[in-house]
Image 1 (cartoon, rainbow, N blue to C red):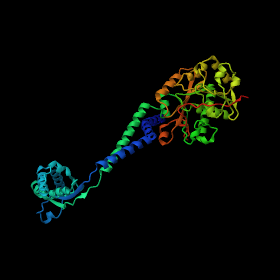
Image 2 (cartoon, one colour):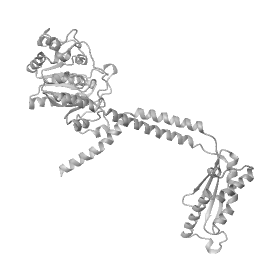
Image 3 (cartoon, one colour):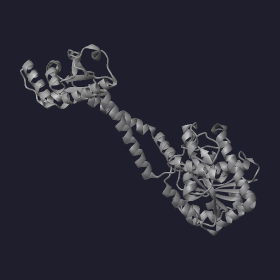
Image 4 (cartoon, one colour):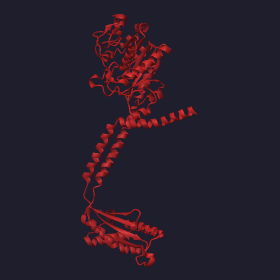
Length: 498
C-alpha cells in the first residue's frame, strides 16, 4: 500500500512538473513580458487616440405587455405567469422586428428623410441602432449612435414615431408603449481607448509567452535536478543555490572561508565533504576529477570549496589545477605565484613534484597550480609523467581534488579522468543546453573512472523552484551568476609544502 502511495505521489509530481517549469520560465523572463505588455498597451492606446472620433447617443425605452390596452376589469389588474412568458416572447419578437424588419426600417427611413431632407441607407440606419432586452423584464432599450449629434436624436424620434403602426400590425393584441421617450443626444463615452489598450495588453503578453516558449524549446536548457536524473540517470551530490549578495567586483571568489557568502553556502559544501568522506570509506575513492560541460558553470569554485572543506576537517588535501588552458584556482583562492607552471614544470623536468607543490598555511591546503596557460595542454596531460604525478599525489595526500577543463569543450578532462578514482560533474541551472551536457557526459563516460555524481550549481530558489526539485542540497541563498563568460586567470603566490 505504501509503495502504491509513493508511486502515486511521484506520478502526480511528474504531471505537475512541466507546468511548474513553464511558470518558472515565465517568471525568469518577467522583464520580457513587461516590455511586450507595455509596448503593445501603449500602441493600443495610441491607435485608439488616433482613430477616435466623437459620437453621440440618444436613448428610448419600450415596455411590452401581452395584454391589450383595452382589457378592463380584473383581467387588466394582475399578471399571471403565462402573461409574463407571453410578454417576454412578444418583446423578443419585437426586438427582432426592429433589428431586421424591412417595413420597420423603411418607415424609419421615410421619417428621417421627412425631418432632415436626406435619404440614409437602410443598413446605415440599422448600424446606428443597438437594441437590447433589459434583463428580467419586458423592457426594450434602444440606443442610437451617430457622429452627427442631430442625426442620433432624429433617428430615435423616428423610431418612436413609426413604431405604433408597425407594432399594431405585427402584434394586434399586445400593448407596446414608450416607457422613456427619446432623449436629446449626448456625447458617448470613449470605450475604444480602454478596449484597444486591453487588447494591446493581451496581445503583448501572449506574444511574449510564445517567444519565451519557442526560445526555451530551441535552447533546451537545464532547468532542474530532475532533468539530470531523469535524462542521464546521475545522482545529485548536492544543489548549490545561487547567491545574490556578492559584490560585483568580487564575483570570482566565493569561498567557504568568507562568512559573507552565508551559512547555506558553507553548509552545502560541508554536505558535499561528508559524501566525499563516505565515498572514501566505502569505495576507497581519494582522487576526484571535477569537470563540467562548458565554461563558467562554477566548477573551479566547487573544486576549491570542496578542497577547503576537506582541509578544514583536518585532512591533507592537494588541490590540483589541471586546466592548463585557462587555470583559475589561484585567482579563486586569492593567491599568486609568478612564473610557476605546476604540472607542466614537472612533466618537462624543470621541477620535481615536491618542488612544485605549494602549501598555503592560511587554508591548510596544498596546491599544484599554474600561473599561466601552456602551449600543449593535451600532450602534457596525456604523458606518463602526468599519470605518475597523480599516483604520487594519491600516496602523499588523503584527498586529491583535480580541477579539470570542461569535458564538453576539450578532451583534457577525459584524459585526466583516466588517472583518477571518480569524476564529479558540475552543471549550472539555465546555463547550458541538454545536448551539451549529453555530449560532455558521453565523453567522460568512456574513461576508466566512475561518475560519482553531479553538483547542481546556481540553483534558483522560491516556491516554484522548490516544487520542481525532489533532491539535492538543503540550503537556499543564491549563489553563482557571478562567473563571467570565460575562466578566471591570474598570478599565484605559494609556500612550499612543509
